[in-house]
Image (cartoon, rainbow, N blue to C red; front, top):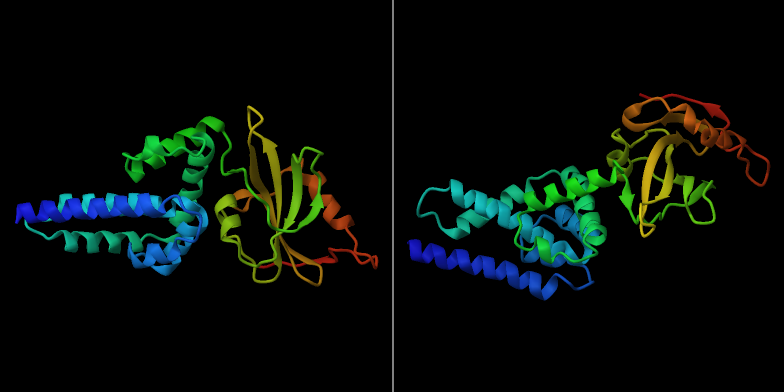
Amino acid sequence: MKLKEKYYHKKILNLLKEYNDNFGLLNESKKEILMDKLGLKEDIAQIFDEICGKLSIWMANKYLKYFYEDNKTMSEPGVLHKDILDWAKHRFNSIPISNFRRVLPGIMDYIRVGLNGNKSSLDDLSIVQIASLSSQWHDSLNIGDGSINYIENAPILIDFRNENGEGYYWADLNVKNSPEECERMGHCGRSSSGNLYSLRSFNQLPGGKFKVNKSHLTASISNDGIIYQLKGPKNSKPKEEYHKFILPLFDLQDEDGDYFIKGFGSEY
């Protein structure tokens, strides 16, 4: 039984390596591979594909191998590798989506920026060790919950940035519920009454090669111009230093001369 177990254990590790070697560096969507070959639920496969891109399979393998080894250690002698692997997949698929949204972007920033895209030094490390190195690297930059080399896809409502693209701006998130803003700001990131707007900034990191993007305030404003929320991180009161970016919201008018904000409301 032990020889057979070792055989299957080696087989699964070789299989994981094969998936990484054959698919880990391609650019197309890995969602189907993550679901069909590694057994991930669709929503988890989607998150890995969106955040990790061409490294999504490599990253998922790290999680799966970690749970496989952990389950193998805890299992009774003679348990077949298939059962251990099934338990590992179950544990993997039981992780809340919010956990991946919180951890994966930081690891990918570490790989893409901190390691210049070269993950070779991480190939023999566990996901726990990689997450620890990522945290240490982020702490050394002192950027908090910022995102490195972030691409802003939301329309810009008011832009205060300079010619180098640094500074503050109001982004129209065009949604009532934003998991990204929730993770960045430490609040619910949702409104039942209005769409969300985020005061964000781009600032250059030391060395001049990369920029960090951060959210500072979140506002909820309805289509009829009623502002329902305006808050800082963790539902805090906006700091005075941001008043100069808040006041222009009340001066903003459309081409017909109608003010963007026409009144105040409340929710919660």
